[in-house]
Length: 269
Image 1 (tube, rainbow, N blue to C red):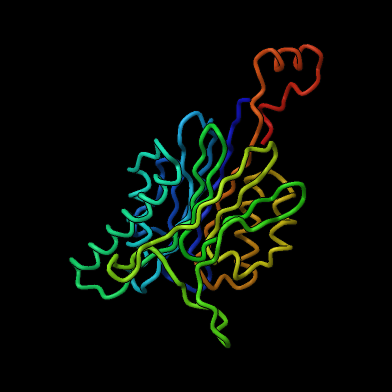
Image 2 (cartoon, rainbow, N blue to C red; image 1 turned 90 degrees about the horizontal axis):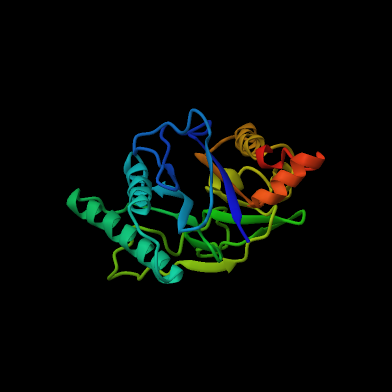
């Protein structure tokens, strides 16, 4: 079976904040640490014949510290090989990114800075879901939205936004980072959503699911961003969508065009 992955990513500073502490990784593409979001969608298509990584990082620390933490995580992801055992590769990436952020903080006498990480690793046998923190990963399949990631938070009564139990940027002598990792098989038509809490804090899951099922992938990403902004946009919002598509063989494409059935499927958004 041959598969194709279409992706679209958008990032916005929101209505309140001046800085964008979010970043992303789309194969080898990411934003600089001093960014104002994406002016146009970052989009493309790839075949998972070899390991391919996409994901979202939501920085924290105030001023420019969050931007730097999420930038370092994205930069680390772009320079990491995910060959070999996928779980070991993902854990290794998270811990190395964590180490780089801690080293930056030490060099600059910074007491606290960090970022979440929520990534998808596509390989020939399927997709690995991996996260640290509370940036979320959802799967929309068969008209049902499911959260795949695990929120790493400390439940505290009376707190509207509970603190994180782990994130990238914690010294190893204080806590060993343990990312959540899960495996999913490819299923044609499945849509994965990776996002910062600038979306999930602003838009209910039921509405997110409805939006994902309307229009093209690019339109859905823009609609999710716009809805978060319409509802207040209190935080930076980054939306990354990936759709699984079954790659047609050359013979099937030829026959479809010959008999006028499905000839345009390969070009449908």
